[in-house]
Image (tube, rainbow, N blue to C red; front, side):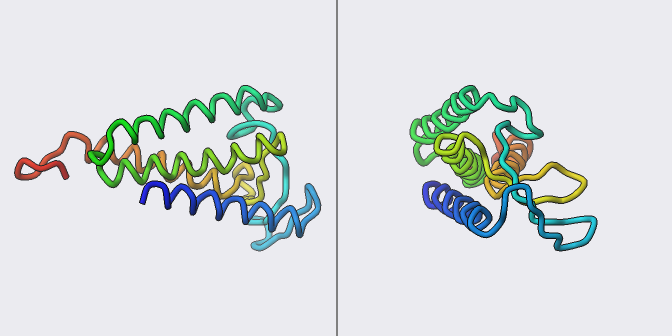
Length: 152
């Protein structure tokens, strides 16, 4: 399930970006809910909230390090990982790989989901955020907890 989820995130992310790039002009916007939500095609050379804007090589190294650390951890632990942790790590790795593909091949990440009160983002970003949320839930509510001698 770990690898299938990673592949699903990458496919969905890359397909959505391909559709946006094929059907929209750069910096164009399609309002869906006036004043609240649009599909807006931009190219982001930074990380979240445009941090490290234009520092593509540094961002690639960071992403590769985190993704390799996740794979190394999962391989090291083998089947002893709780499903919540495995799902969280798969979502983080899948989202990271989706954006890494963009950075390596294009030098930027395609962003298009635009809530007008928040920076523009993409499917990979959503995957990483959900994965981080699950990781927090795992750390606070699952890790180290046992019921009748078995880890929950």
